[in-house]
Image (cartoon, rainbow, N blue to C red; front, side, top):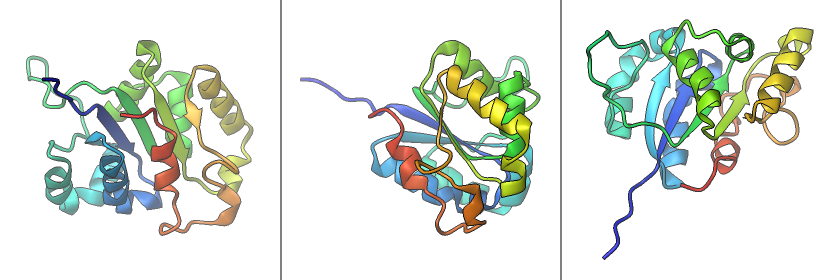
Length: 178
């Protein structure tokens, strides 16, 4: 008799408008067969603080947003892949620079070194997307093996800020099969 264990996906949500629909991302990943753990940036946590209990119930795991203290046990299973969605201008640039001053950034900067599958679905304005540092950061992350869904195959900054049309399904589809 064989047993199958679901693979674990960390969904890292940053403080951009689609974060208020993080449950949509969780549901899309779960429908694709992933065991989903939700990690929020500090500001995303602030935005979703009242929804954290419902999000924890939806995932079946605690929702994390800050580093644990030394000696505290890990409460999440290790990830098999990480999806950063929505990925903000700030997070993309810090990630590419190797900055890990939050739990979310620590996990995704480390994941590059671990060789984990990484997908990023940005959400930012057209003016930020036009900033030259952003283009360099995206290129760096792609060179490091991160699949950044920007443009025709993902998020298009020129199309505005519609939370309802944020392509969660495209981000999940870009992940390896669980």
